[in-house]
Length: 542
Image (cartoon, rainbow, N blue to C red; front, side, top):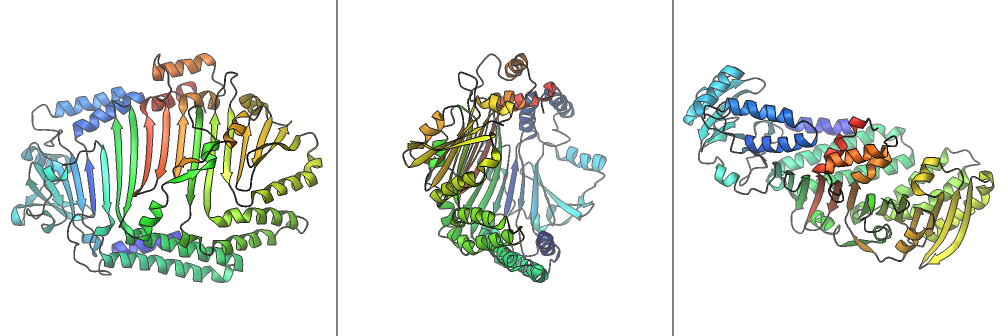
């Protein structure tokens, strides 16, 4: 199916006569901005220092400085100004206007660069432009204006009246090293219709091709997947307004980060779905704690849109039928019961999950704690008890189950003592005991000696939760993944990365996904955390 979709997209780009439409009025479909050569070298030198390549970057800077010594820029390119690109998508995709903006310090030196370095000799063309023969696309046109050279596919693309001015194009400096902006609402309606039609056709043909080979259950599942995939892509293409990607490197804050934002047209289904992702609370997120003492922490809180949930129940039932039908007769009853007990949670189309590795405590032990939202938790609890009753004797002394050892709020607390716990795991947690808590709506667990963390978490109130959060503290993680590291080696690594100061808050990786007015994906890595990671190879940590 993927191949057919790719072919459809390729057809869209190659079949230039398939859709004909005038270029949409207003702003470009795509805008790209990149900082100046000098700024990029500054950022590269900072990152190079983190990964042990600072001297190499300094060498590059030296070459740039030497080539710019005559005051004519870097081969005629102004190293103090940013670069840009604009593209306006039309129905004739291949011929859509595209303009590249390169800052110029010396026009003659730049033309000499093209001739001597690239074997490209521009010649005078219409309306004050220059034309140059180049491989693959045959020719491009150049216009020198506003201390930039504009490079386009045609003379029309370089109309002096419509060229973006650097002052306006680079007016808003948000600090990004580079950014890409895509305006979905600038894509011609005819082109959107064509893309959606090709996707629908591809799915329909694939479904028809494989239909005879599919069982009833497979057909129900694949029909649901195909229908909702098409619906999701159609909603994105029709209802999205802008998609923006920005990359930041902040030497002063010691941050490397990236951000993706998706905004939707007001009043659309997509806007409603994105808005519904905000303002949510999660008990699992509260159960695992605040994360202040976490080595790593993950939370997820989201749900399928109402439209996607349609017929999900039938798909789950079909999947269960498909799984059970080929099982040996003696296994079918128990497997079917397990699947049907979990089915209400799957049919709900909701994800509410959290897990954290916390510690170490004063004794050097860590705690693994997690929780998940469920439907029919009491039925799941009964299933576990019945399975232990029926199959527990086969485990012998390997695992000992104790049910209903305590009640905390709406939760029943149980324990599992695992005699066969691997020694390294037992050492990590300082215990071979698993704590389990069940209620009608949630199941939680922890690995710790006395269940203190879990029982405290069960008393918590639901906490605000993003769609997704991931947090990792590398200074705490290194001793765990570097099993062969000696204490002195760990200290040496931390000192190299953080000096004599504490690594707390300076060693983190964080990823968040949030909804609301827009869908936002953010990732941030502290520079010293990156530096710490690069030292792993020195100690051959795997």
